[in-house]
Length: 74
Image 1 (tube, rainbow, N blue to C red):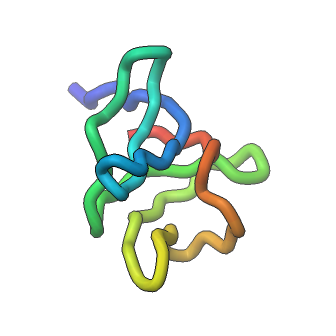
Image 2 (cartoon, rainbow, N blue to C red):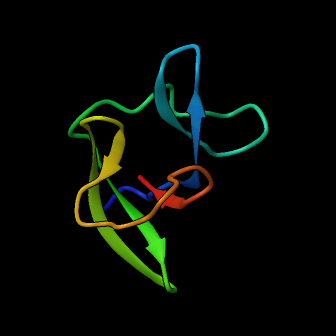
């Protein structure tokens, strides 16, 4: 049986210096790590990607200026 994916939004946690996924007011994933895979919703479509860190955080294969607020599922 397939596991149901949770949907949330990317938020930056300055204390951890990494992105997190916010599912609800008090429900967070707990911080994303380099190489972690999930789907991002762009143009009404779910696109598989992973988060990486270079000079800044970025999503592989996704060209956006700011990651904050992107709708994701994991």
